[in-house]
Image (cartoon, rainbow, N blue to C red; front, side, top):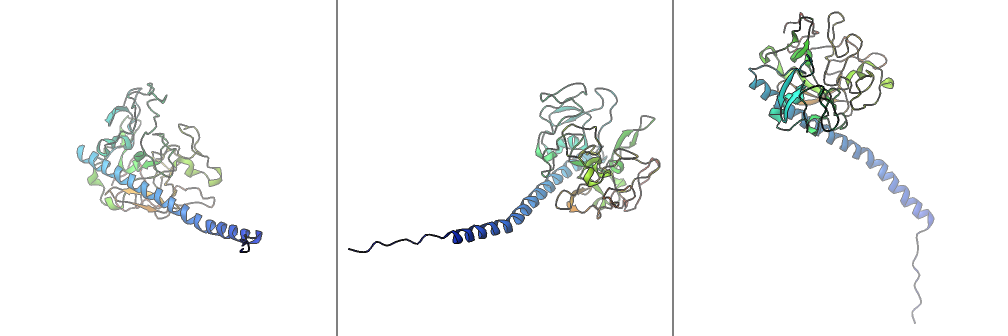
Length: 304
């Protein structure tokens, strides 16, 4: 008879060594996986912006070379209105007005008046985008049309706010006034008025909460340029609050330019300045914002 053969089992030390090696490998791989995931989100965000760019170009071509306004102003409960994909919409933003060319409805149930409520319980002036092309993939919950993830260079391209005489502040703007479309920001990742606060004071985004200027996303659809005039200027929360590009993609913010190309940039590359507390100041450089490569803030006397 053959003698019984005994199998050698792993010792406790050997098992601990294997577990330690696996833990080490996971620790080495996780940053790479997280980086790849963030890069994928940034790439999808850039793709969204390029689609928006096509929509803005088509809007301009269909409206006599006039650039889209940032958002139509409020006159009464049902004005202003405009047709978007899906129907008539009360005070649509630049994103919603670009939808006719993008071909995707921004809202499942667009409302044509402020005092009407859609099937989700949202009022006509504060609806949520229903489809991802209108929302940055890095912040997928930022769906409120007012406190959105993408902001527009409204001051120079379509400041459709009303002044004291009920005239548009800087709209319509003909695209021929933009002398350097490849060096002029049109749309970008926006952090909202949280830009005016130091990072430790910035508060998390809450959908449809527009009451707190320190909260991420507040007034996000209005993207303020770096340089804001201290007298007779313009900003989302002038004179104390301002919005800015959000470097949410590993220290960079994605930006669409008027000529349709999109790329990622640091806030410094875009002309912004930060103070000692990392708050965005008002005295940056507007060379990539005003259309003429000049560092000039917008005021009612602005000439391109």
